[in-house]
Length: 201
Image (tube, rainbow, N blue to C red; front, side, top):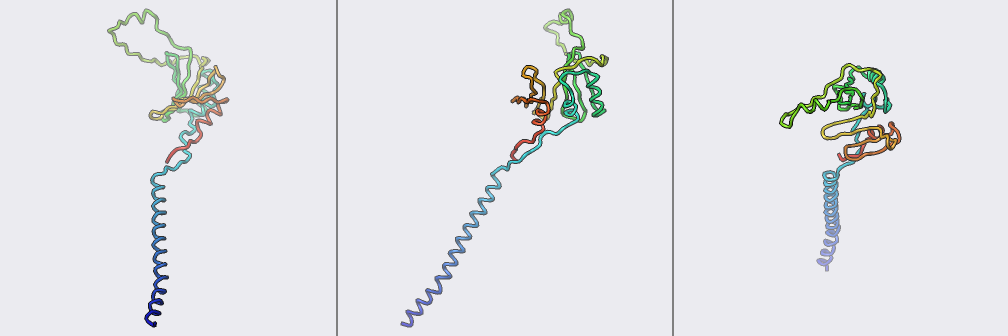
């Protein structure tokens, strides 16, 4: 009888120890699974955050202050007020630009200055002649000359954006060289261009 009691008492003492060991083993497995899931989640789930791609440059500020149609004098005065480093270029093919050497954006516009090639000039070249067209810059022009179709262009790498006035729809448009977005005002269009976008990090 005494041996039997000793056996039962020994079994009773072992049960709590075994229970604790089982619980510790289960806890260890759960912790391992949780740590693995967290690590995997961090490595494979991209985080999304707002990223500012564009900032307001002197060229963009100048575009913001220009009417869709103005004079070269007004353009020159506005450019000089913002930065003496801005350069205004007019070319004989009918377009002009406002540029800064350290900027990746420009303002492009159109004018009615320059000369056009006559038919006689074109007949001087035959099919076997390779003609290299060069765009000649106009250096002498009246400051009262009207410029029109003023647009803002931004280029970086292969990406490009444009902001311009669409007279047919009476709105401003922002183009990313793929999609075109319309806005009631120039301020809205520029705000959309400068707005941060959601990107994966």
